[in-house]
Image (cartoon, rainbow, N blue to C red; front, side, top):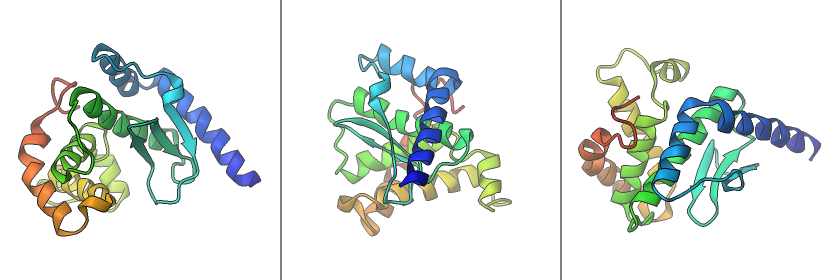
Length: 180
């Protein structure tokens, strides 16, 4: 339990640094406020997570950052930005249904595209390089991994949703004016 508390404490400090210093996180929080969905520090929770994920968005209580799967400040920055994109989508699209595989796929495609998940450096660290259209390949792969975790959208449903939503959602960069 002591090691868990230590990890949570370290991750909490990294989260606070993300919220105060990371330009993407500050930008997303400002855009959420402009859209009528202010994001206060209580919206963010640091937890030990069962699933092997860096974080998650729970519409009812906010963003979870997984202390046991994030190690560096950069990991936390990416996870928080990724989850803020989901929170932004949820705020903007009043009818967003997370059990609708197309809705979920679109938000995952946007989060992978806009959060830095698929930046060249991230892909190199994963050992993925040299493939034509690597960025799009990464976005699809990461969106599919996330959509597959949704009980309502596993297997072929997830694959179909990601393929169907890809072109439109990959290009939709709001609130950024272009893919950062």
